[in-house]
Image (cartoon, rainbow, N blue to C red; front, side):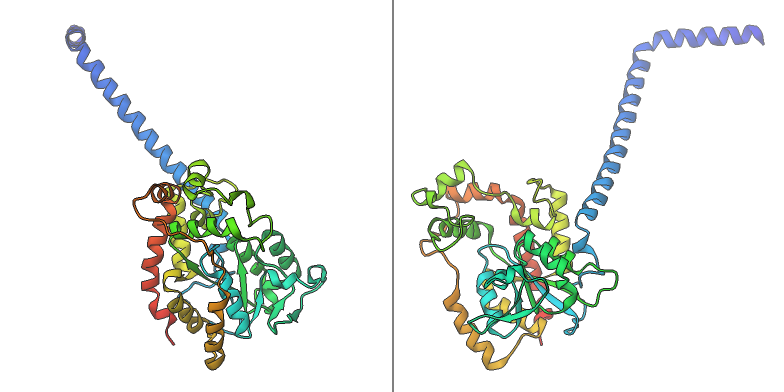
Length: 348
């Protein structure tokens, strides 16, 4: 038996020497496969960690204890409308329109006439006859003040306007919420919106220094895009709550789509009248004659650029903008799909 064992080992040694190169090759293949498997596992774990981190980052907008899902039955007594105002989509018109309907509005007008120093919440009447809560929910500083004064659970505002939906949602965070927020928004083609914003800021002398840019007066739009081009994918950045990071990924786009699908009633600037009708039916803002009167007046209160020049598809401006808004374009196309899917939500 001992001699047979010695003979077997000798035979194996000969085989190893004879097939040494093939065995080394197989070992290399095995190591590459093992490395690839480990990389896949690590990548999946990193992706899961990123998803958890992303969900944590967008917590307020995904918290059913704070916000209603768009398809949930509406409770007019306790649900409060929050409009995500994306610049140059028609939001300024809607601010005037809903105030005209007699609704109590929360926006930048609320802190005019010295109301920025009020120590408690109140509804006051503007000289126009419109009613406002004495807070400004359009900016971050104003949202913090509104939150500290308890706007979300006061029930005072019928419609809240904001450019920061995540922060606005936090106004409704409380251990025992009586009121919950419901988001709606108006979305415009990113290329049209960018052009409109540029031409408006060129000539908006009545605006503050954050909006009006006098040194753009003689700048061509294409030159502006070549040099800077503005913020990249602002809609996805906002919904993914990554404004400070300034960069977004395909994963952030999916998060933005899901938030838009579950939490927002979507309107389109290209179908403005139909969108407003849908908003009104959904929230119960219809008011017969007053509705028509305010609708007619809203056409006179549009905040538009008089020198607006449409961007032609296939032009250099168009191509540059499509690169800047690559993910926003995908979100816009998804918004068009949602607009069709949500038709039943806007019916009486």
